[in-house]
Amino acid sequence: MKQHLSRFLFALVLLSQTILSSPSVSLAKGQRSKRVDLIVSGGTVVTMDKDRRVIEDGAVAVAGGRIVAVGKRSEIESQYAARDVVDARGRAVIPGLVNGHTHVPMTLFRGIADDLDLNEWLTKYIFPAEAKNVTEDFVRVGTQLGLAEMIRGGTTTYCDMYYFEDAVADETERAGVRGLLGETVIDFPVPDNKTWADAMRYTDSFVRKWKGNALVTPAIAPHAPYTVNEQHLREVKAFSDRTQAPIVTHVSETRKEVEDITRDHGARPVEYLARIGFLGPRDVFAHTVQINDAEIALLKQNGVGAVHNPQSNMKLASGVAPVPAMLRAGVAVGLGTDGAASNNDLDMWEEMDTAAKLAKVATFDPKVIPAEEAFAMATITGARALHMDADIGSLEAGKRADIVIVDLDSLHQTPRYNIYSHLVYATKAADVRTVVIEGRVVMRDRRLLTLDEEQIKQKARAYRERVSRSLSALRPISDSSIAECGFRIAD
Image 1 (spheres, rainbow, N blue to C red):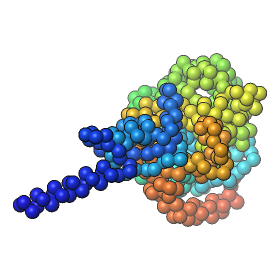
Image 2: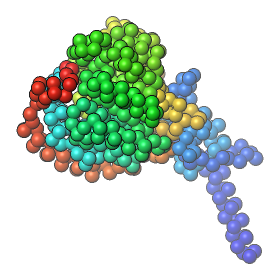
Image 3: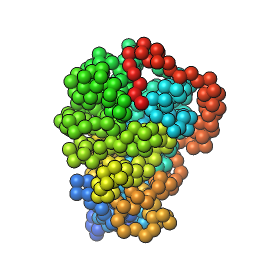
Image 4: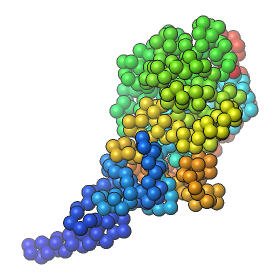
């Protein structure tokens, strides 16, 4: 008995000495450290909290998937001890980026139809290609590919709308990524549901299954006010009110959309949606390119989040969203990549850079949307646009532990003067080093830990052959087919 007790005491002494001598933990005399799961130690911590604190030689302590403390490294390490310590010295520690709008499985359509306007792109290529190729397996492979790309670029939360969204949610949870995921409902047969009734039943089951999940927030995603009729839009709103599910949709993307809806409904898109009682604080509107001051006021008044997709809007020649006016009015405006078929990547660093510069050239004002504001649109303001800012978007005690560590010493980042300028105008996706989501390290030192990159690329290349074969036999959706569905495609 004494021998066992002696061994136990000896082991306890050794453990205490190990903890006290660890370079990652510095204890004040007589003070006992609190155990946490993870400490991100050192580096420039860009908190994006209300005071926009930037902490040099800072640290973040994490337990149970949430941030428990943010501060100077000396302070954090004097109070906390962790099983896992990530050394971030010489790097930036930032909130995970928020991609506010995409169609993640469409990574498998990357580059099939470029340099076209939205109408031709949708009707002659995308809708027919989806009809021939999109299955649940297609969605899973495309989602895996997109998730790997987003993790590598430091995106920890994304807002999606596509088909077979239950499969998207399954792959997202498995990869350890956070997603606001909307099942697309639309007024014509699509790959996963052939009727409106089928789509609503699928969506109801999808929302009930994933509601309350730590990573996945289920939503309903009516495609657009020109592809979903008024009765069905009212049904979507009633569904959202009943289930509290967010609504994700495209609104006012092009001039023709505005012209057509104004002709058919006697009001511009946002005004029309307000008139039928659709607007509300669970709405996330993608694009909002062609909106006026009155519509901006309606978005603010109803708590609608907006997502700016600068590169996709440029590539499809849809126009320049009035982002400065929306921000001045107090609308929460986030950033999105849109799908990889119209961008053609999921790189939020490029979107930050483009959003800031596009606003400057469009307004002839170099001071509009400074770097710090562009970075906020990809983090805390983007989280607000998705109505998720209580949990994500900044590094603060109590929030979800979504943390990204970024190299700061690349040639294109040298020398450094202002951290926001550095992050927005110089940093690339390849500079992202380590990614933590919900307190779990999903990429460490550029190595993906939850996804098999080589296997994903192999499966994606196999789909390339199938999609290529289908493209040769594509037939555009005819005007008569469009008319039968009761809507017009905007260009």
